Image 1 (cartoon, rainbow, N blue to C red):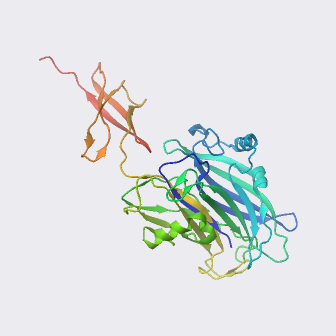
Image 2 (image 1 turned 60 degrees about the horizontal axis):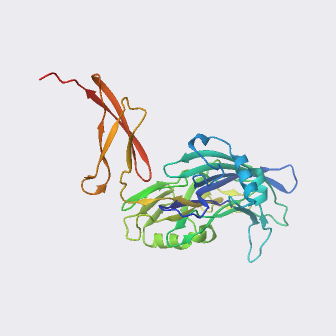
Length: 384
């Protein structure tokens, strides 16, 4: 069985607790020439507060760049092998036994490759894609699945939970060949960003995009027990009150923020487990009936939705280099419709010749920015 842990996290205000924002993990495996071993490739999307991730001092210019050397340098400088999280390995437990636990952090730090996927300076996060190639022993007295786990803490403060809330991700690897494909199972690949801004007072739907190389059916559900980690209680409370609903077949979350439970500035996380089901009867280490017993479960680290917000009041309006004139902007203290505190701008420029002019303005609020352009027709009035 293969788990994929996925998590969503919502947050508005962040404290100075360094940790991860959110992300997701998946894996594929293949035979090894080393007897009693298997090759496992992990794919790890990991999001961090801007300039706190492996990229270090990240900017938008770093998108697409490999930053593995920066990660290793930071670990060396701080003398902290767990600076970007702790990794471990454990065989599937049976009964009360505890078998084969290993700390994988040093091995992962040597075999990881990091590339910057996205930098969002407006929301203040960066997203890295990490590829980790491991050679792991499966030489046990009897066949076993095993878990690969990632642990860290949430960056900042989680509402009603405090700081340094544990964050957990895992994949459960079934290294034995499937009867339908003749090779080991591959987990669903889930693609989520680390940071989601949701407007308070509204109902939001969020799709969890996932694909499966084995063409298995995919379902998503809220994580429970170990997979839910520190967020088990909040998941239970949100589902009982119907604030949170999951369409398992379509992998869609519906979150109702039109509820007195939430206030602007709240932060919370939602752990999701993504499961893949065979479309026909399949045997691996165990028997899997079509659409009934999952071949794998990928717990997507409590993926993060960040920022619940009410009204977006505009902070600043500026001209851009797309404007064809030097622009002077005057602000008014007025409000729009008497409800949203914003800034109304009066635009002024000196036009020496008639004709059309393109004026482009950048409006910025606390969370995002947008550019709008208009064409102004300049006419010279005749003498009176």
